[in-house]
Length: 252
Image (cartoon, rainbow, N blue to C red):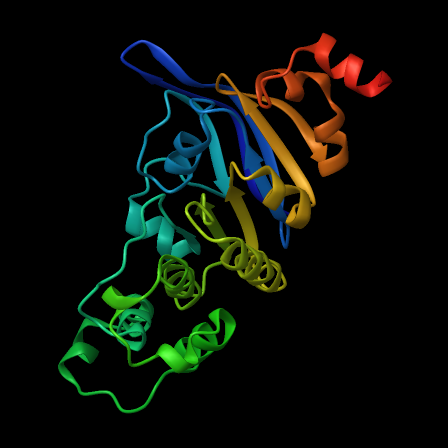
């Protein structure tokens, strides 16, 4: 069953068409990578799904429910969570406190007046999944770049989402951190549907299965990593190579 269906979506900013008639279907349990050159509309598409940007036309349906008109927090409560290109954590709080705060949005307001004991099951799961158990009592402000990104992903897991939207999760990471993040995404995809916006082609080739390529606000091609990588249009608009160069490389 399709979890996310986008049909004929368009977004216009001051006369500029950032999204131009996109159709996109993401199945439940899928790990989908979304790639394309700068300005292709990747982040704008995520902004529409999460309620940050209103479309000019088209529909976005999550689990059979249209998202048009819903506020950001209402979409989160339906089970859609996201990260941003810049990590957003509370630096003066510990890893555990950040996760607990993220998980708390499902609690009724009256429960905040009561002192809670112990750690919830969802927070323990987020700690275990991200591998941050040993850092649970450390302030988020002293974490490495990769650890902060894992914490932010853990904060999403603690919200029990059905769909995670991750915007360039390995940007600025070391090789080892990228590898660990790839393993983390693979683990998360066992229980969630995940859409990853990414520029790192090495990371893409290693961890992606299904890929959607955007160009000038529209879907250029969808398919497996091999299918997308072999398409001369992708080599031209995304990798900066002409069809002639790609043909010469194929022959040589």
